[in-house]
Length: 372
Image (cartoon, rainbow, N blue to C red):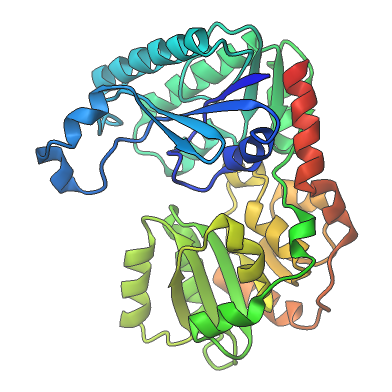
């Protein structure tokens, strides 16, 4: 089977598409698109590197063929540029489908539904709710909703990452929706090397860890405010990951004298089982929004697979998951600090419910959806 997966984020960013495409690529021909501009700093706008963004680029990531999509960037705040990018994206996807004789396309809201022998819509998040909570471009919300509505009507199958998403989308979908959440390879947690990560981080003692992509300022604000409340206790808060909000959070931590907060940098996805095993408590400091209520939280799954007692905002999907290792709290620092105190009394034990999120089994289910 020849598969084209259209991720929602730049390919270099850890995301749901990586989970399934890396497994599928072991037994199928897998292509993915990468719509991120091919530059890394503002200086690249004035360099010879920038014109490369106007042309189709192709490279390999292991068994996966990655196609760089021609685009003008930045375009988020300019409707004519967004429309130009959308047309180029669609034209490139059509060409990839023809040139590589693609059998099935997995689409997301970043491009309108293409004509394909089989079309699957991957509903990974409530994207309109995300832009309402965190975006600054109201007209873009309408564009996202329009594209997703088209997928729900035209796709041969829709896959939702959470039961909340499946319920929300079911009212508009023309065909049944498959619930396939994010997952973790439980076998990878059989033997982990936590000690080397503690040594690398120079972080002895009791560790409250938060792992992820940090693009929402309120998450790290909650981490810092909770750490300030627990400054008299002994936990060290370890922030492991990448994201645009980390530099400002680091400056704020230094300004506030929060010596109990350590920013340790990004963790490769392959090393995540070892890194989270170095934590004593897992922390999910989400702000409660309609977007967050519908998420399939990857960091929560990693913490559960490692058997960590975990503190998480009381979100709808998380409640439905029913993990026995999770202490549910409000989305305010006082509630989270109290949750951490309660979590310290819980044993380190993998919850039985995590078995439903074993990634190899989920990938098999996704493969069946792709085959139809």
